[in-house]
Length: 459
Image 1 (cartoon, rainbow, N blue to C red):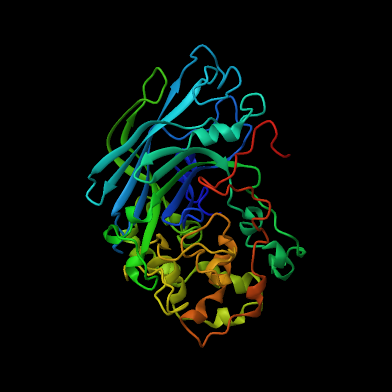
Image 2 (cartoon, rainbow, N blue to C red):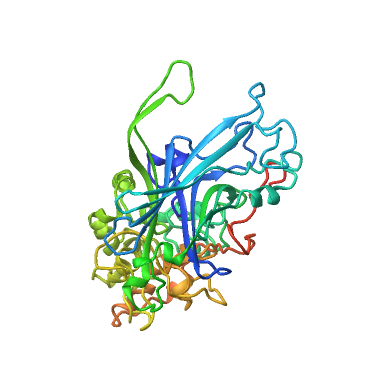
């Protein structure tokens, strides 16, 4: 999956676990960019009595690099704190929550937002902003959409923010992918290691009917663009920015004998990060995943080997004997994947006017060309599907990043940098068989749909 439970240590710390990052030019407000950073993987909607919330002891950040050095030039910081307003009850709420200041709502969460430059200088944009409650059910949260709408806050300067529970929009067949790569649509071709054969079948969405916690930010393009100028030439490197999200905790924590969170001190230490989907998940060795989570994109030269020679590409012809002979015979470093994931794609590779290139420094960042306008007819396969407004040019919510990256690893993008390579015919069938069909998204900010309710969630 994109980055849910992708490393041993962060899997033990879900409130700090970056699960998905989206970044796109806002389709209904194209002078702005929307960035959505999701945390807390696989939230079961029926989660009482202690429902999900952001970590009061976690520093959440969204970073933007607009000069290609792998360091943040602009960062937005989010700090949360929770309050109990009905201390005598064990319940999250003691009656219907019909407003963000409902007297029946016991466990509330608020946050502040700050904007910093590359030197850590900046200012607080807002404080004491209210999160909505979790979606509990028809009696506790009878009009959830209105509660969520009330939690969309204007920060001034053309900036808008939302932080709270949303429906999970990432789709993937985890059960198949991590069962030794037996992709259901082509499972009949799997080697099965001498075990009984498998039959081809539709994919199963492992993330259906679960929720996440989202930090969504809509900001003017000029807020993050190089030099604060609106870019107009999509072929220039200065038109693209790199985006990633992090979560950090204080260096020291001392527990107290009377319960509670204890005492924390010292500087913040990064424990999670996310740029491109599936990077740490698939391209970083298990023994290095926790270290990767703690590092800056500026240090990603240490992970070029895993991109240039991806383990999964070598396994495909083993798992599916004879299906990928051209890929199996290809011994050159994967310059296509290095461009897609570590430097951005230079102009002239896809087309003269298309680029996500930010410079030669390798860094895992979700790159977004700010001069490319939203597509009138989006294709969920993004650039691979001929839609240059989609992944890996940023990432829209409905982009099928699993299929895109599986096909890229299988060799679909090699001809972009090496015309002598002929992709294997099986590439057209490479997919986990899951699409975004059935996703309920909003047409305006924060775009992610209403979270599933604990009472009415499908079985």
